Length: 141
Image (cartoon, rainbow, N blue to C red; front, side, top):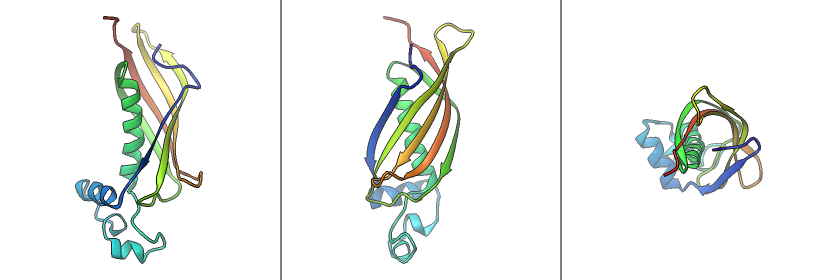
């Protein structure tokens, strides 16, 4: 089986100012809080903050990387709740918890429901997430 309820997987990441600015620029996000250091320092955040698409893509990427190691995986749906800013230079922990696994009518194919989060160094949940993925086990070689 590719996953069991209560399985967890995680990784830590630190987004540099360059990472934050580059992601915002490449994704077309012109919000100065993500790429204009002078304006971001004058804001209530005191510096650059990661965009919502950047934090959510990190969570989705962790999920895809985890399940694709031993199976074929595609995302079916994800939702995110942005609770606090992720500051450039801050180390964050990305984590997913497997909530449920259901086998479909096709042998070796599962629907996996997940709960995820991104926590800051202080332990605050910056982003909460829910996901559902389709995982197809690879045949033994």
